[in-house]
Image (cartoon, rainbow, N blue to C red; front, top):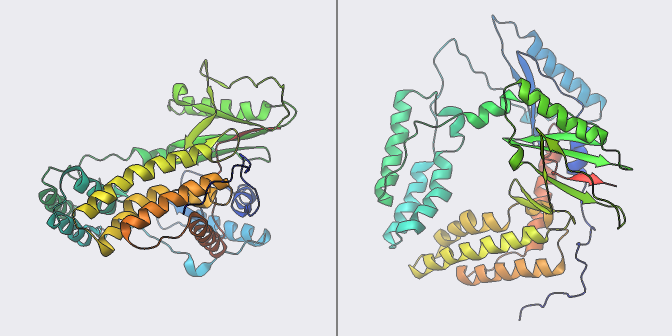
Length: 399
């Protein structure tokens, strides 16, 4: 029998077991930055990359940046794993770049197997987008505009094969854009981090995080205004209509709400819940909205799993579809929320997993087991590579 939810559980999950290592490490190494016309230090999640433009063989600034970063890490008791540090040299003096090596041929075999079981139409296209297309087009914004004609022909031939299996035309590699990649490089020189305010940039999303004490939000509003002014000077347009503000008010009740931030003459919408990078945050700092979204996605994708089984798909092939399409949606961001959801939400997620288990015909780990495993794997990767930076959530804190 299914375990009934605990009606007496608190609406905000138990904070026990929460690990602050990721958040603290981000603040710990945020004060080291470097950017010039020929060298730049880029931090992304738990990876750091030094990018240098070497002209006429003069790599003094490039090597100096790396040595300064190593010295700073040693002074701050951070260990750099030299065995995992790699160097990629792009030599524009010669044309000896290696062609891309897609994994599409091996995954097309799974697509053909599905079609042999009678799977067609939108269900087959969903599998292509999730498993085959994600492998073929990985990082396409970086390499699509600079591959030689022969490699472009090889990729297009692979797409024609996939098109013949699907029975519908597919877009060619040509025509893709570099907008996201170029935008990341374009706005990398604007950064801000202090004990109470931080600007976090992730791909084409920027989040200003501020800790407001005693109603003094001067630094927080100043950071936003400086970012708006910098964007205007650099010919970047901020869409004020899509900018949202999430306020987590930790004060006692009967306090007047703070005035919304004004950007280019438009007041930001103050929302109770916000979808940031696929994770739903709310002003109560619980995961109710996020769990509701995950349960809805899981139920809708379980329908596809049942349809596949009705076509006779079983065993490893059905499990591959579950891991790629269903499991990826259910466990998205689980390292963030698994240890702090309420008993009722944990019961709802486990019930969803039991349904998936009955379709697959094999047992599946509970949310708690998967969450602990993912969290330990993330912490282990950080301990092995201590030169990175972790994403900060978009929360305007009030105290």
